[in-house]
Amino acid sequence: MTSKTVLIVDDSRLSRMIIKAMILEKHADWEVMETTNAEQTISLMNTIAKPNLITLDVNMPGMDGLTLAALIRETWASVPIVIMTANVQESVSRKCTELKVGFVEKPITADAVAKALTYME
Amino acid sequence: MFVLNELQQDALLEIFNIGVGKAAAALSKITSEEVLLSVPTLEFLEWEEAKQHLPGNGKVICGISQRFDGPFKTEAVLMFPEEKSLEIIRYILGLDSLLEHLTEMEQEGLCEIGNIVLNACMAPIADIFSAEFHATMPEFRSGTSEHVLSVDAEQPNRVIMLMLVELQMEKHEIEGYLAFLSVLPDIQRLTSNVDRFISEFTR
Image 1: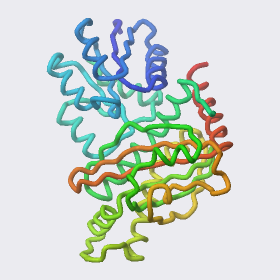
Image 2: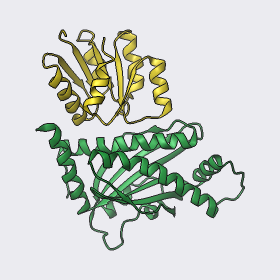
Image 3: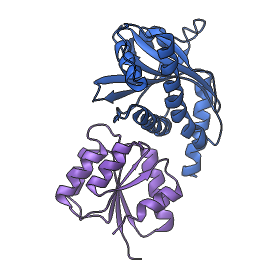
Image 4: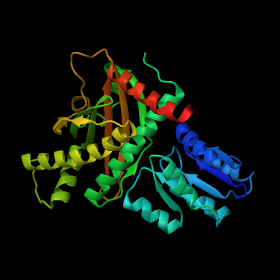
């Protein structure tokens, strides 16, 4: 598989560390970028090419992950996005379907990360 | 003063965040309404100081409390303003009552809701620590948040961990809280487990 780029958006440093480590363990040549909130993500988007996958937490300080997903779509209409959250309410999974983004349940495990990567283009 | 390093604090919040997400899902299912969550806040304070940080502005609230003992001890409390507790339980039970206070049956109903929501919260936390929590029966309390969340009167100067998450249910304009209280040395047991959890990913 050719080298890919993944952007992880999560306010939890540990969650970012775990997702990144699990991706790089299987795909050492991939580039994994990290942001901690919507503001940082929007700034970063102005400076990078479209990644192959964006993982988003939902419950973050400031803008939540679902609102950010809709905003990202305005710039990168086709970028694969996957929501990684423990918030398993029907309303959240429904919004994911409406936004055409993937949904993976936390806690973050090797299986959860593997599932997230299946949404990649 | 008890202090966690940045990674311990982050891990602890994330672990509780996972539990709170499941609790919100359980509450959403019971009430057929979306439950919006705030980002949890975590503080280590003496009780006298913690009282200043409690929600409710001195108004009467209803709380359902359960003590959990496992990888650490904590008291988990689901709280709503009294009038909103009436609204929630009467909506769920399909009751139509003009009484201004909860009847015994309504209190039992709220306890059952608390039991479902609080256990939905603590179960994934137990899984993360590969352990098991034993829970007391849910207990109904009514009063100010200081009363509903009061720690053991013999331990007023001990440091407590206070974690608060705001729950919002827009359709019924209800704001509630999930609170978790732990007292030293239980906090140290908790952080030992958090350290073990972190070490699994930072080896």
